[in-house]
Length: 118
Image (cartoon, rainbow, N blue to C red; front, side, top):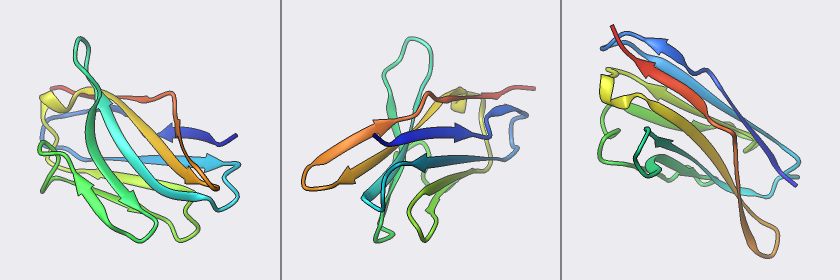
């Protein structure tokens, strides 16, 4: 069982920056990709960014050019650097980890609240 925990949410002013961290345990090196998604009240969960163990990244339309996803070398931590934040970025941000130990599984964290407001 892989455990996923997000860190770093909080309140930030419009135009500010925030860095989210996502730590995992129990993967035994089997993580092949990690991703960030977000969900605002009354909306579906949307893609923010993903990164594979090979460093290939993919961004949602709303985060391109402002957010940067990264992963550490031992593939147990992922980060989301968010710049030029807007009020519409307010949401619960979720991290996931995809593993492949013969078959693919996805594990989710509990989420961290990001609020962009003056």
